Image: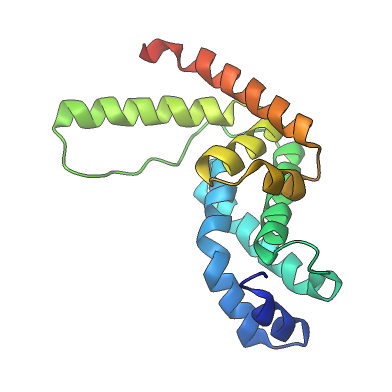
Length: 175
């Protein structure tokens, strides 16, 4: 049983507080998916807002054939794919985060590697990126990715394989 089912039922009957709890429960993962696919925190925030707005409007049509999380991940993934298709990809990667307290040389090297990795991920096709983000950054299983993206299991495996090959080529300088 979906742990969100009670909140979903309440939200479907118009309870805004129940929907707000669903948003709080899922907003971090939804944001991470959007950021992983779009690369820009501002675009990711916009995609998250649109995702939850679309979910609120679509809640009466949600049939609970999948979990709420799978449904919301599908909405954000489709939203991000549509955004990527509708505009040119940004050349600037805005994901940089500082962390820990390593020495200056180590920190610069780590930043450079992170920047290369993020550019490589953003260099994947939108479809490969969606599959890669869901599997490797969000830890979703193959069957859930099938459900989220609405594609076959062989298509998921193929996209992951191609994404891994592309990333291996792009990151070969690390060796």
